[in-house]
Image (cartoon, rainbow, N blue to C red; front, side, top):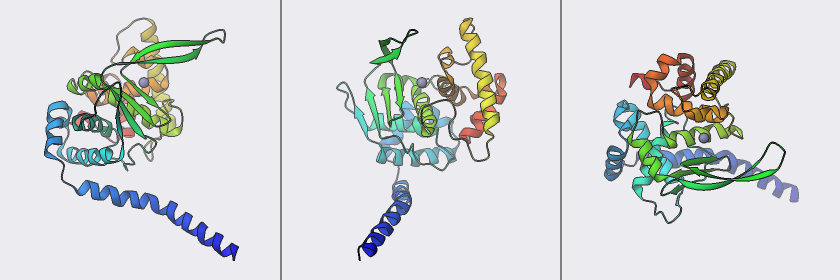
Amino acid sequence: MPVLVISVLALLLVGWIAGRPWLAEVRRARIRRQPFPAHWRGFLQRRMPYFRRLPADLQLQLKKHIQVFIAEKPFIGCAGLEITDEMRVTIAAQACLLILNRKADYYPNLRQILVYPGAFVVNKVHTDGIGILQEQRQVLSGESWSQGQVILSWEDTVEGADVSDDGQNVVIHEFAHQLDQETGQANGAPVLAPGQNRKEWARTLAAEFETLQMQAQHHEASLFSHYGATNPAEFFAVASEVFFERPAQMAEEHPALYRQLSLFYRLNPLSW
Ligand SMILES: [Zn+2]
């Protein structure tokens, strides 16, 4: 008898685990069928000039992603900030740019988005050259944790969305880290598109990263912020900002990198 009970329980457990993605898909399909609220459209028009640049089919896809993203991800105001629909829509719209044209699982590891009114201070502990722990205060506009949090400054989010062609966008940056963190610690090696060649990706990004490191050392100008020379993870996030916001310059000056990011994101912003 206990064997039978255990077998039934095991079957129920397997059924529950197997059925969860299906149930999530049913729930998401229901959310996507709901009309996009008119006042949300107003936020997109006001806060995200980039939206108008997108082809009609991607605009529609993005609006549906925004609906699901907002339904699933809790936003938490920090330092007294009260979260509004305008904040949710502005952040979700930019975050979901990165998951267009793919089987959207909406950043499965992301549990919450924390929003500060402006830049925020964090204390970072790191080991110095002789192994002594040092605490360092840093002022940040955004941060992405592999434990499932993205932290954003609302002021920088607004600025990033408002100027959509300067290659600087904190939301794109932090959510690129989230994609990278789906494989563990961010390292510039996210899960690639089906059929994308991993060696080509690694070779192209490593070469571009090295070039940027040299340019940063010699204080030479680059299309990429020198912050991208910090490590391969930062390079991938910085390159993602430029891919979305300055595709023409990137395709011209860094064609191999543009091609790799275009394959990875399944998008060709150059044609928009
Ligand atoms: Zn970063």
